[in-house]
Amino acid sequence: MSTDPEFDVVVIGTGPGGRGVAPALAEAGRRVAVVEDELVGGECPFWACIPSKTLLRPSQLRAQAAHVAGVSVPELDWAQIRDYRDYMNSGLDDAGKAEWMGGIDGVTLVRGRATVPQRGRVLVGDRELTCTDVVIASGTHPAIPDLPGLEREHVWTNREVTSLAEVPESAVVLGGGAVGLEVAQYLQSFGCAVTLLQRSERLLTREEPEVGDHAARVLREHGVDVRTSTSIASVRHHDGRTEVTTDGGDVLDVERLVVAAGRAPRIDGLTPDGVRVEKGLIQVDEQCRAAPGIWAVGDITGEAPFTHVAGYQGRVVVDALTGGDRVADYRAIPRVVFLEPEIAAVGLTAQAAREQGMTVRTTTLDLSGTDRTETFGKGLQGGVGLVLDADDGVLVGAWAVGPDAGEWIHTSALAIKASIPLDVLQDFVPQFPTFSELWGVAFRQL
Image (cartoon, rainbow, N blue to C red; front, side, top):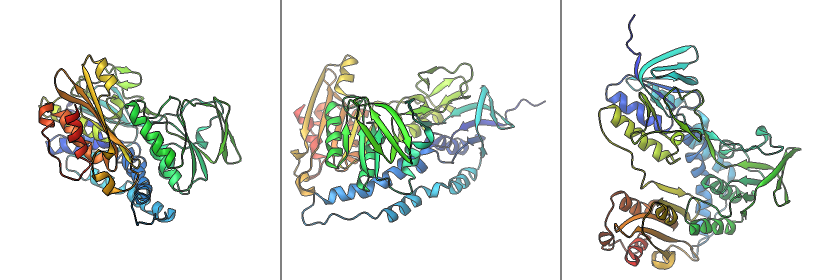
């Protein structure tokens, strides 16, 4: 009997990680199977990044218009917004993406849920796929807290809230991270009365305190009732509504409870002997290897839960499987919350840098530090901040709050990635007038 594997590589999951791995390996001459048990394309195009940013854009435009002299604030037409969202998420139909993936020469698309009993064997229903290597890119699902009275079928997660058909008249959003903040802003813009609950004392707890303060201010100005240091004590579902009781005794009776308080890795049955799991996450080395013949990419590794990181890790794995020696470097991964104004960060916070033993120097600069701000509109608020490793004279962290900050954060991201010396950064000459001028001034302040 032949012992030759059916495939060179089996990729589990067709999100940004798997989508990056499979075609590249096929192009390199490998026989690849891709397994998907939901929609081909993963979470991002159907229930996450794409529909959420599509729903955010009208509220961003409306907020921007309110700052511009002589411009009327536009009305929002929910029916048209919803129709465009349905266009952007393909109506939750993956036929086009499946046809593309399955049509790649060297790639076989297999529908169903995969398990990996051991290296080289992947089971999908009654089919066994044999291979040399397995790449796990299975992603995550919403984490539902164990709250007294909560019934899963009566709450929304990112999936329901990005594919909503009608806007609820009121909602409690649980979670002060990026997803919770974005959901709160666009629901409020569409006429929903939103209360945002965050257990910690500030929003965006992994960022600098100033960033969390900016986020709270932005949402409150938008009309969101932001409550920090507040947890849910119990939930009661009744008559198509949900009653939320906080740990402070407040009772919030709303049409919808939206849970945006974290994600859980989808790794059941995917961790054979030799794969190490800590806190529910697959542990990988600098080439994203989890064990001999087993690789993992994306949110399930816990490195950074972003679409762009999953794609990056996929490229690292492709390089390793084709004989390269590339290693992953997560020092300069940008993080953006697409509110209006946008909130962006990259690298380390000052506290994290000190915990790594660095001698830290920081500086901040208000958004008014560039003339571009007033040309862009009235009453804009925000700013930038930098974290410097003073011993080595290189930037290790940065944040920005302002219009399109998700675009111009990349100046500092590249500076961190390339370890550009401070004296070079201080000689940086940005275009006038732009928001990028803020970096030049801040670099010189250091």
